[in-house]
Length: 393
Length: 231
Image 1 (cartoon, each protein chain N blue to C red):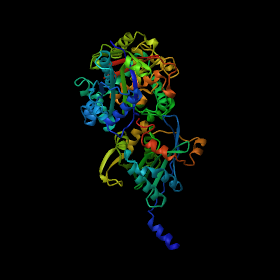
Image 2: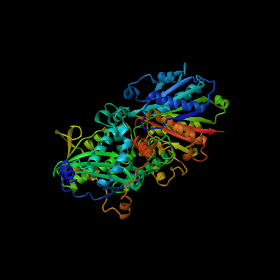
Image 3: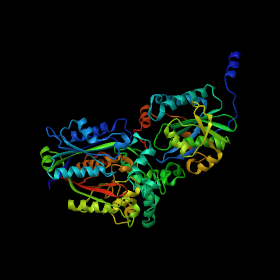
Image 4: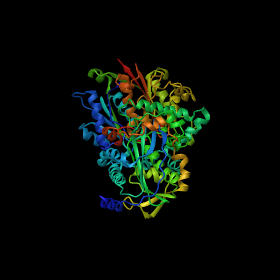
């Protein structure tokens, strides 16, 4: 199997876009291609992760549209739909294409334009990934699933509203230094939790989850250029190697799991990724976890092996996961504050980690980062992709 | 001159006695303190300056809200609207939001507009709540007639309170069928939507005495969602 490196990274500012989906993805792609400085080399394949273009933007065959827009003919091209894990799934496909020798240069561009519809429809669109007969039909939405998950976690492991709020405060603070972040607003524990006004500032969305426990609905795109290691070295680009990728699935309906607080697919995907990379969670310098809800950052940090089960919230409290801690998590602001255009998210996590490993993350740089981990969480944990990146000089 | 004054008196609507809105302070999600207080007519010109750049911002219907609010505040300053009032939200003296309304009679209020300058901190929600607090708790009214001119307003007022339909009454804003906030609905919603503390500490009140406008570019950036928008 050939080694695969990330040689180009780019993204748009997340938030609310006034331009169309293809234009948005083109912008991110051009930034990544410029970053890669390919010269005369041509992209062999294009993977386009996206979850909702057909429904939200009334557009299908978006990979063909993007290739046309970017004049990347005759590259192979296809869209990848795997719910909120579409991004990392597409990177995995690109990795496979290069590792197998089928392609030398791959463009992976994820994008979503969710704010083309109102909030109610956007929530319903995301809820359509739940089990149609066991969950969706009863009105279960993703915040509802996350709310029930959080309640169980609180009862079993002693997680409190304060721990959740600490995650939100941390990630909002990180996003202040990320010019691509959707939400650039400092929040405080007093303002969202302890002040009498907090009940208005931070209303309940799905008890015990409150407004600042939930990610925003975002538009945005992110892009990576992948290449064989040989090409990366020939181009003289800093080599950020995709050292490991793991993917695992779990039951569609959350209640069918023996223990709904166990995110088995996260654990298995992470184990595979670490096994492939030949390193352990303790070797990781920085991580981007899929904090669509604050509880998920805590739970994923445990399942990925960074902390023991039930101790992730203690690490948050002790500042271990802050930017100056021993394991910074979500220096980009995470989905919580950077935003969550679902198809772009998994790619954007790796864009951030690429910048971190190259030392190009500006004010939010984690000093000396050499190894990084990303968890892209699909469904409510029923399809998860974990990725390990390493900087190799 | 006397004739002009007489004519002017005829042009002005009759006014009712209105107890003033007692200022309060609200801690926002950012930890910043926003003072909500009533303005008098002399302060209208600076608010018009703040609103003017928004007249051409289509996003989230800022243009129509700004245009109507501009006219309403001018009418207030020039005594051409009956029993109007205006509240402002100020963070360290800097304008964060404006709300206004008027009395139809002693029992019924007419909500006009809510405009948020500093977005992303539920300033609009706090300001609208302060307006309802004025009608219900200070003026002792029985109901307030309300419409929304943007989907955001509809979510914040009609759905969050929730308001009742009173479609048989056309609202002053374009003759749109009215919704109503009753005392029962208000007091039921109050624990989750109305906040703030009184009295306002003197140093905060002093800072809020003069209205400072944020830079026009800052206003546009905030209103267009380039910062702090989306929550």
